[in-house]
Length: 263
Image (cartoon, rainbow, N blue to C red; front, side):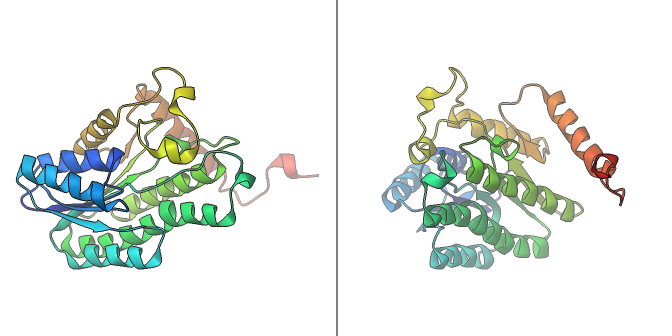
């Protein structure tokens, strides 16, 4: 993935994974559209990247739990032909008992992690398909493959991102449009402050540096990976997971109840 004055739009770009993606794509020659709620941080990042890489950076303050702000970013994606890469990175988490948070708090997570990502993907794909070129990188999580007693909602939203991306990969397989799902595990970002969990309580050595995560994800993109799990060392585990998933799907297409359900 290299640029010839193409642009990349990155959500959640003011810190963490989004900010590192901004730096790495700027180094590849992309102009940038940086989206986040914290305007001062966006301007600071834009100033640094423009000076370092001689690129153009446009910032847009947007809260992607709000309808008007989602529409504003949709318009940028629809109306800016130079944008050829979308990084759907914005997301949040609340780790804990499902009953310990309000309906509105849950709705905000769903809107940010699912609704906004879906609508921005739609806005980008409509133009990417017409141009037969473009790339979308959706940041999911290894919790898309696992749920605990404290991660029901977060795991559910990331499971959506994972399967949504996989379905679109199949739909656009024969086009010039690329989609990648990135599944980080624990990563050193500010999401921990929002989630209510301290990374200090995690096993020693289990938290990946943000820079390592993004560099590995981009290496996976360059290698043509559809699914990238940066901390997974044993790739055979993923192959066995895929084989089991497909076997279960095939075995379930019998049209009759399994004998254990018959009386």
